[in-house]
Amino acid sequence: MALKLEQSLKLTQQLVMTPQLQMAIKLLQMTRLELTEAVQQEILENPTLEEVSLEEVTPDQQKEQLKLDDPSINMDEQVNVPVQDVDKQIEADFVNEISEMGGGQDSQIDWQSYFENYMDGPSDFGQAINTDDDKPGFEKFLSEEQSLFDSIMWQVRFSKIEKELLPVAEEIVGNIDDDGYLKDITLEEIAAKHEKPLAAVENVHRTIMQMDPPGVGARTLQECLLAQALFLPPAESLVATIIRDHWDLVEKRLPAKIARKLGISQEEVIRAIHMITSLNPRPGALISDAEAEYIVPDVYVHKIGDDYHVVLNEDGLPRLRISQHYQRTLANKDAPTETREYIKGKLRSASWLIRSIQQRQRTIYKVAESIVRQQRDFLDHGVAYMKPMVLSDIAEDIEMHECTVSRVTSNKYIHTPQGIFELKYFFNSGIRSSAGVDVSSESIKDRIRNLVEHEKLSKPLSDQKLVQLLKQEGMDVARRTVAKYREAIGILPSSKRRKTY
Image (cartoon, rainbow, N blue to C red; front, side):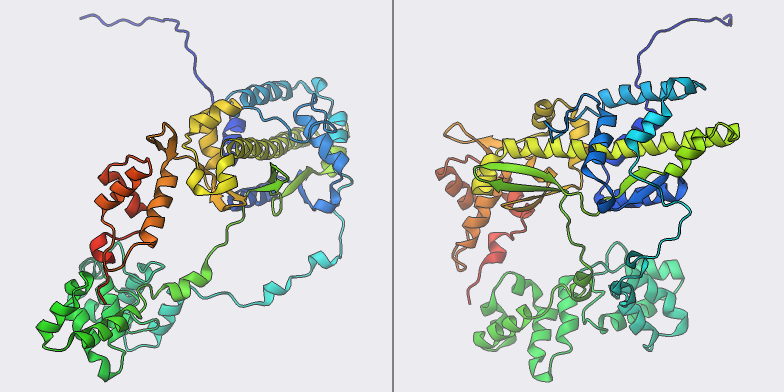
């Protein structure tokens, strides 16, 4: 076998992801909060960027900024700026601009015209401003809300748990979810990790379950309710007995069998079960629910007359401009070359960020507009009239790639006359009804929910019965599909929905 070296030429095509294109795609899939944090970080790192208030930006300046992206746009005639495909056109435009700005070809760039069109009034650089906006808001003086972890750990520090077992207690509390259950780790694993006897770890666990709220840290619903039942008066000891010894019969709703096993009347058992249902199955929610984050829609849909209008929610989003202080520095021909090159690099990064944010907003608008156009029946009549729709339907309508649509709809919310929904909510599969009309999976789920809400508690509808009722309405759905949809909307099986008392 002979070894030899040789050269060969090979022509291939591949997509090169420039840093600018990567930034545009990254911003596209960010949430409002993530975008705000990313912009604030960029402002700290890039001195040429400034954040301005809405009052400082005039309509004419907004038009000029949008013209910078597409000079052919007549802002007086067209309010909704057309969107370019992030996967196609935006990369070509960005690469062309970078090639013009690089390589020391300063003569090809009319920086003076650029700043005149892109700036928003005088810069406040180096000037001290004393306004009411600089004063801390009233909310700055409010105390911070206590988390579930902080609340329990505060009680742990004042409990009788030995000092050497405090790390064990912290490990247990740290693995309690928002509902108040110990998840993702066992007591045996905690004992092995901290090299403590299992009995000692179990004692710490029992102590934590007796803290406020009672039952927090339980591993199962039965353990959670039993911990709460132990705080009931002695006269209610039957409640704890039923939870501890006959939980399987409680789940099956068989009070008569429990009564026979305990040698008491069925009425006493039913009264105890009513007491059990009054206990809290989610003790942690008493504290964690107070920390709930509210959804801020990215898009609003308003019905005016017979038409629906899409409006982007710009509130809270940072408004950026480039500092004119650096415009003057760059225009100064006596400035050192290194300084000019540094400023040009920062200006290039700032302009890319601003344009990427504008591109993100336009893309969200166009996707939302297409969804509204295709889901008009849903907006008029509700979820029962939702049409099956996939990403490719929107991608073809707005002439974008499916990946772009997927990024846009991730963690973005839309406010409609029917409520607030994630954009991804509108993408769902469907089945063909007997009338030859496609019915979306969300419509079927909604119909299952309505049927269960109106069922007899003494004789709940089984999955097979739901299949028959849906078939009578023209929806030919398999039983396993009904079971899957029922579980997806949080409805228990018929055996656990039955109430005989």
